[in-house]
Amino acid sequence: MILGDLGADVIKVERPGAGDDTRGWGPPFDSAGQSAYFLSVNRNKLSVAIDLRTSDGAAQIRHLVSEADVVVDNFPRGSLERLGLSPSQLLAEHPHLIWCTITGFGAESDRPGYDFVVQAESGWMAITGAPGGEPMKVGVALVDVIAGKDAAIAILAALAARHRGTDAGSRHLVLSLAHSAVAALVNVAQNALVSGHDASRWGNAHPNLVPYQLFDAQDRPFVIAVGTDAQFVACVRALGLDALATDERYRTNAGRLAHRDAVVGAIREQVRTQPAAVWQAALDAAGVPCGVVKPVLEALREVDASPLTGVAPIAPGAVRRPPPLLDEHGTLVRSRGWAAFQA
Image (cartoon, rainbow, N blue to C red):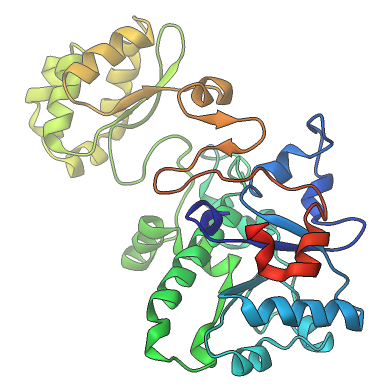
């Protein structure tokens, strides 16, 4: 979808009859019977249903591949080879082609990759949730999202390098949900590598910054995110806690980490006395990052979003086509190939 947003012509090849599994991941479904899950990631695509197990279907795929710039697949290891659609062979036949395979756990693994399983095994669930509570997954299938973005970046880099005449092996990009997830641990991973100690769950607090967490105002929860020593001084002064601003124990972030309970406790007691809007106004005026906890519908009211095409992409991305019905463009694609985009 990212590549389609950026202007690529995208043909989505689906199984006849059932199509993409996420077509059935509902309710909710819209008035046309499309699941919200499917709608969220399938705009700017044409849909064609092709049975890869038949000789005619395999021939149709080979024809589409011959004219394509990029192929993306997430088949289990060896599946395409058994269908006579070996990526290595097709890459050798078409020197212009980029092929991106997205796996669950890498090219040598036969394990299916689902976001929830990868969140468990990548360390995410070990660090998400309340301290002392049970491991918790992120509320969005974020491993899928990050791996998709990683794939789009890798594809764009490969396309930019294509003029160098790279060999077939280097034009086959192989990504995994597991690697994308572990790489996305970023500072948490580095903390563990540098310290030699495993990461913990911090709930809505931060392992390296204080104050950087959720607080309860008089009426609703909100977050304060202090990233610098100057922001800390501005923060506590805006909250009416001037004594904290001059206390040498809290002058540096390291000191605030050492006295986390005292700093957080003082702020927690103070912010309970006023509505969140009062504190946000004061903190905004002081240049301190903060924000109220908004439900999804409230957050969506502040962006360009559609029940059909989802949250609009940032320019230069654009929504040009709604998510397709299963095989909606099948007749055109099967008869005209990529020329279907000019139909």
